[in-house]
Image (cartoon, rainbow over all chains, first blue to last red):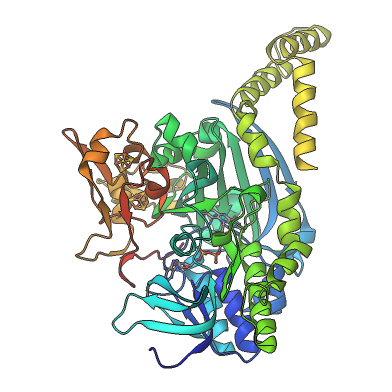
Length: 434
Length: 115
Ligand SMILES: Cc1cc2nc3c(=O)[nH]c(=O)nc-3n(C[C@H](O)[C@H](O)[C@H](O)COP(=O)(O)OP(=O)(O)OC[C@H]3O[C@@H](n4cnc5c(N)ncnc54)[C@H](O)[C@@H]3O)c2cc1C
Ligand code: SF4
Ligand code: SF4
């Protein structure tokens, strides 16, 4: 392998690496993507809603050819207590028209393979079944990769690290430290099969419509995290993500937590008759804006989950930030090639573009949220419980006059939470999200 | 409607009535039977030093692994690698950086069919 020098080597055939590969190959650069899986996608897991603003720019009308599951036309957020649920649901036909609100459920093993086909069509070389174990450096600049194959070295002007959440190479390169358990989430998920008609009946869907349900509170036993059910064509993606340090402190096993969620009275009836097809696990980086690593060095760019580019707010966006950063890294490599300058400065347009786009602007907007939430965990434990009790009391039908009911509920609210404390919390929450 | 006997076959359902049944509860072992692996003979995960693990108070690896690959045998922490989903969580949770964590050889390890 060692003789031919490439323009760009990309590590990882996920959405980020493949978006970079498509952009580079179309600009006529020689690009190789190393992927450790048997095929692109065979190591990858997400909830998941694929957000497709960037994909639409790379492959217009992708929805006609990509292996998508359903259009997300319903979003539902719900707070669980042990025996109750308070939910907010939004359903619209508007999202059932192109571009379908740029939100589709997908199964990654299929989607990533399709995206890799697009990259190959554009002229990129994808080399699967190959682990990259290290990077080569010369005079303080990264110059290539070391793969775990005989004669497996290859050099390039630029290396793009799109290796995902478990970013061993970015750590090895000294761009970041091993993340702490408070900055990483572990996700576990099951793919549960049900016939198409049953799914459509159960979730009130027709045709390609789909639902995304997110659950907080007792869904993850009041810890920092959330659970989800996403509808696919003839399966459901059912899973959760929870902060590693919270789980470890509570000594709760991820699989047990998933079983706890699945057995909640509001959840189990949505899963009736389902047949588990697969059990999966993967991490999500959630350090947020303040925990961003160094993303540029001489000859090296870091993108997607490896760079911690995940919007940790209610939106749970990772796939589009991954693809956007991949495209931007590719553009920076193209610009560097034109200038013949592959130093950190020469590649600097990457950071400038990240900063002026939704990627870092959205992350900056929510920069205080992770810290806020970790200091206000009662939002997920105490508040849902009190809320369920108060609503249970408010809607009680037992002959009590309504005026008295109202008084009782208000008195109970004052006693258990208090107006001042609640308003204070709300103001701080709004500030953290401003 | 026929009722399956083992947990795994109890999953299947015939007729619309079948889809009203509570889902079969699978053990973790049953779930891992559903996952495709191409296991390498060489372990990709190793504990660096038994003494460090013995001295580790919280031993969070025993709880955090989604496939429960870390178990106690007597007093000793034992790590198996066959059912590993390669999530990397154990490496993050270990307070003593005591796990030699590598990816399996290319093409080996877990092979998700859905993702
Ligand atoms: C449970 C869960 C739910 C999620 N839900 C959503 C959601 O609903 N919406 C959303 O937008 N995002 C979601 N995400 C996040 C989303 O999955 C990621 O943000 C996205 O996949 C990041 O893309 P990436 O290309 O950066 O990394 P990845 O998709 O992880 O791709 C990295 C690739 O690199 C390969 N690789 C790694 N190391 C090496 C190496 N050394 N050598 C060779 N190859 C290597 C891997 O095999 C992999 O193919 C979720 C994540 C999880 C875990
Ligand atoms: S957490 Fe780390 S040091 Fe502690 S027992 Fe587990 S592997 Fe050993
Ligand atoms: S990588 Fe994940 S699945 Fe594998 S042993 Fe570690 S925690 Fe368990």
